[in-house]
Length: 227
Length: 252
Ligand SMILES: Nc1ncnc2c1ncn2[C@@H]1O[C@H](COP(=O)(O)OP(=O)(O)OP(=O)(O)O)[C@@H](O)[C@H]1O
Ligand SMILES: [Mg+2]
Image 1 (cartoon, rainbow over the protein chains, first blue to last red):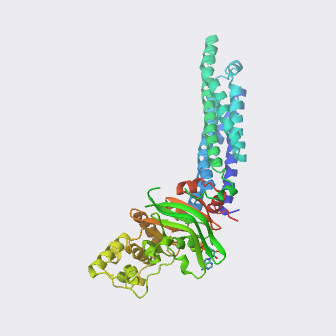
Image 2 (image 1 turned 135 degrees about the horizontal axis):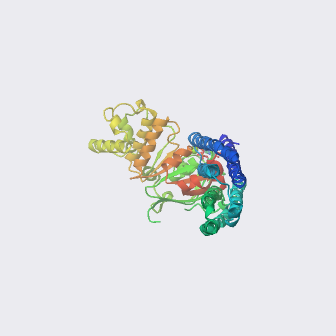
Image 3 (image 1 turned 180 degrees about the vertical axis):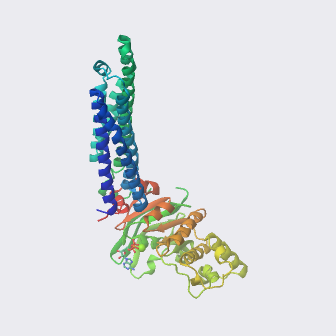
């Protein structure tokens, strides 16, 4: 392997570690939300600093690779994609932290009935799955899987779109649920953004992998030189 | 294409039986800067020297196919005329050591037995050195030997010598490989200026240089022109695996 290939392999590993960390942040925030476990929510908030420093580290590594290796072609596309994926992961981490913050702030625990009616948990699970699958698409450079993310995000959008109505119904049924209902709505809004971030990541994966589909060796042989 | 200046049609070069440039087809437009890249020995220099008929000067060297300059096959033209119309600058700056800067610039005329008046010579020298971005630096020492100049200045002097012949096309064979980064930059900046009036074909092993200076890049591999495309395309998403392997340094 060339030195640049080594750098890129290392960078890829770092991104995957960041991905796993962000995923675990989302999962913990979800547990904290369901169990109304403020300690767990605080842990997520503390770990958010880890996500941020991860982002800075990856940014710096990308800068160094650009400066020292002048990457081109697939390497260049990978690095450009890595920079953007890094940003998207960091934002996904922010989302986990803000959900955790709602848990910390909320005076009352979230009513199971509202969680059920708004499909919040189903939405949450799907958001985490989407993030996991974009990671797999990234690891395996699988653009078919990356493309499937766009459709899957529709599920999150649908739940997000119907949220105001189900929230309004819950409030109508029992006005006392108003504060927690608003927290639930905010969480749904946040989860919708997780889908958007994953969609952005999927686009980056397609961008960097797909221009890689190159004309086959044989077809380069005859009379193609004329441009 | 109407603004095609030079075009190779099924062009081949040989050293004896050794087939070094294979069936190259390429069209280059007026005022383009073309970079030519490829591994050592792939035939870049040989191809370049076929364009201005220098290849045939080597014993046993032959070629087949056409090189059209403004639509006319150079192999049907007078070779001396072709070499004047298609200038060439080499890897190592090679000013004539015994000639002054001034004499170096007009050397092409002297060598071809063309007599010029003093006034004509003065005009050509000033114009060529200006075009080569060297005039300001040497205008007060025109009668010093060209070899007193720095490497980068010498290379620009060689470019001025090529320009003096009013060529249509200038070929550069690794023109900055013997220069330090500052001289390299000054020559690269010059390419940018020359582009307004000339068409340039530059063989370079410096990938970043190709990326910086050229509009389109040709990638040769084992005598074949494998890929010829916009330089941006080539460096972001090359179409051929061999190009990608080469420019990313993964060639085995
Ligand atoms: N004068 C010569 N006589 C015989 N064979 C030659 C001569 N010059 C070059 N060759 C052969 O022709 C092939 C192409 O050489 P050429 O110099 O065109 O390669 P190149 O792409 O310019 O390489 P480099 O990047 O090293 O300058 C090589 O295999 C070389 O051995
Ligand atoms: Mg050569």
